[in-house]
Image 1 (cartoon, helix red, strand yellow):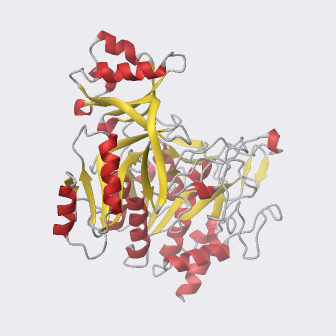
Image 2 (cartoon, one colour):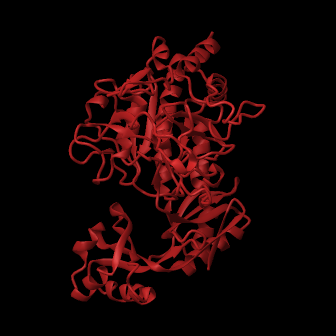
Image 3 (spheres, rainbow, N blue to C red):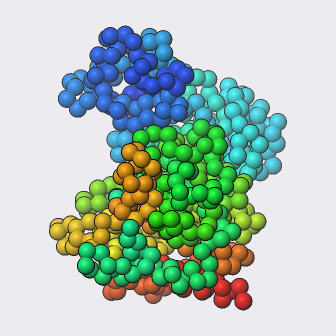
Length: 530
C-alpha cells in the first residue's frame, strides 16, 4: 500500500492485479513497437483502457475472460521489457476504493514555505537524490507560483522509492506540500439549427421557452473586447465560426502553439467553444463577438500540464476560463452511486487561486467548471466544488433539472442543456435533441455537417455561462469577481419552484441560485458601472 497526503487528508493506492502500464520509446504507437510474436500474443490478452499518445503511455487491462490475471500481468512485464522499442512495462497503481488505475510519473511537485531560498530548496531536493526538472521561470506555472519546483526521481526507481521520497519531503519543516504527479483518466462532462437555449423556438411543432433571454443582452453588447479561454481536448481553429477570433492558441500537453484536435475522438472542445462564442455564421455563441483562446489539454487529471494550461491563460490575458471536464461520473440512473471522491491537486488549486486573484489586472479571471453528469453530490469532486470556481449545473428545455445533473451546495447556477427520458424517475422525454453548436469539421466530428444539434451535459452548460460572464465584462470591464458573482446570483431565474427546494438565501442544491438570465446579468453590470 502506498500513501500520500493532500491538504492533510491521507490517500492510499496499491498495485493493480489487472492493469499494466506500457511506455514506448520515442512516443511511438504501441502496436508498431512490439515485434516479438510471443509479446504480440500477450497483447491479445489485454484491452485498451486509456492512453497518453503524446507521451507514449498506454494503460491496458487484462481481458475479463483471461484466466489468471496476475500471471498475464507479470508475463507482460517480463516479455515487453525485453522489446527494443518498449521503454517500460510494469504494474499500474490502483485506487482500492474505486478500482480505477492511477499512473505515476518520475515527477514530484514540491512547494517550499515562504522564506525558503532557492539554494536551501535545491539542496534539500538534491539530498533526496532528486533532480530539478522545473523551477522559477522554467514553465508557465512556475513563473506565477513562488517556491514551486518540479523534481524528478531517477527513471525506473519504482513506486516504493517515489512515495518514500514524497513522504519524507512532506514531513520536512521547510516544505508546504509535496506529492507525486499522479494521473487519472479525465472525463468530459458531455451526455450529448434551432438554438432554443438562446431565444424562444418551436421544435417539432412544440413551443420551447427555456432560453436565457440573450437577445436583450445583445442590444447592449455581444462580448467585444473579452477573451474566453476554453481548456479542452482542442478546438478546430479553421472552423468558419472562429475566423479572426483566435488569440494565443496553445497546446499545454505538447507545449506548442497548435491547439487543433489531434485524435479522432477530440470533438468536445470545438463544441464547447461554439456554445461560448461562435460568431453566428450558422450557430451563434452566447458572446459571439468575444475572442477565443483555445488551450488544448490532452493530459489527464492531476498532470502538471493541467497547471500549465491555466498558467498560459493567466499570462496571456484570459478574462474567462471555461472547463467542461473533471473526475469520472457515476451512473446517473443509479441513485445509490454517489460518485468517487476526487481531491483537487494542490498545484492545480494554487494556479486557479492565482487566476482568480491576479487575472484581469488584479480584478480576477473568472474560472468555471462543469458540475458533472452523474446525478451525484458535487462535493466529492474537488474541481467543481472548489470555492474559487463557478460550478454550473444543467437544466432542460422545460426549465426543469436535467436528469443527470450533479447537485449540492457548491452548485452556483444552471444553464439550459440536453436531457433524457427516464421512466424509473418519472422523468419525461425532452422536447429537443440537445444544444446546436459547432462541430469539428468533416468526418471526424460528431456529424459530417460541421455542426451538431445533440451537444449537451454540464459540458455544454458551462461555456454557456462563460459566454454570459463575457457579456457582463464587456458591458462593464471594471467588474471584480465578487461583483460578477453577486450580479449573477441576483439575476438568476428561480425555476422549478417548489421542487427546486430553494433555501432562505435563494439557493437550490439542484439549480444553485437559478437559471442564468443574460439580459438581467448584463443590465446589472451596466447599472453598477453607472
